[in-house]
Image 1 (cartoon, helix red, strand yellow):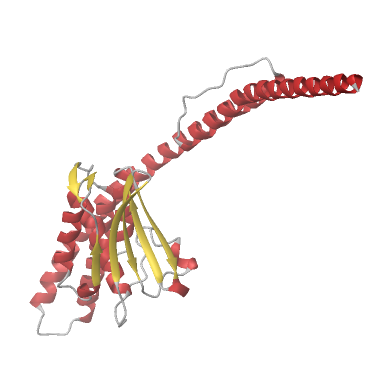
Image 2 (cartoon, one colour; image 1 turned 180 degrees about the vertical axis):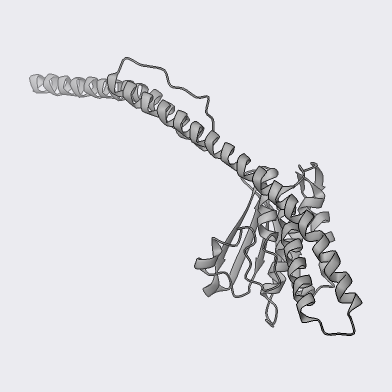
Length: 298
């Protein structure tokens, strides 16, 4: 019996020692793999943040060394492609600005002369002159829209009370068609932004939302603000017919519009402004549930 007890105690000691050894082994293994995992995390973070300065040093392990070299190559290649795209963008932007300038200079006297001739011959129905005038005006409007998109001023950041900002928009839009269906639910909170540009964004989105519920007896637009993960956001929701999956990826494209009288720059301009603020403008839509929501995040 005593021998059995000693044997049992010996087994317990052995198992306990084995468990300690296993724990130490796992701990050592975690320490060993923690650094490579941290390096890989930093690699993906650098790609996400467009950090082209990060590099990974050589290590003794051949496999890890190959992985780090590949990561360095990817960072360098990503940076080269980014520089190439920026160079091309700068080049094409310059060409477009020159072309826009020249076309504006050419079309302006055509509009002026056409208006003069139409007014001079107002007694006669001169269809050809009216066509020239209207088409010329359309070109000028297009060029003005392009100029607005490509000459956005940098934001003038100030502390803005969201409640005050949204209440001002409510007063401003109350007299517009469907303005009585706009409801505002915002707390007394502050954001750091350009007030004029924020009014422009809210005006663009709210008008689109009010047009979406036009003719609907139960139509409603809700303007809300809150904080998520320590960052403020503003959402605008309507219960209109929604945006189809085929169209939702196109609504932020410049000059794209589903409305006959739309210029197609409102949403594109609004997103560009939010990018300049270090934030974003996103949309989600569920036509079957009659829910469309634009979210302004900072």
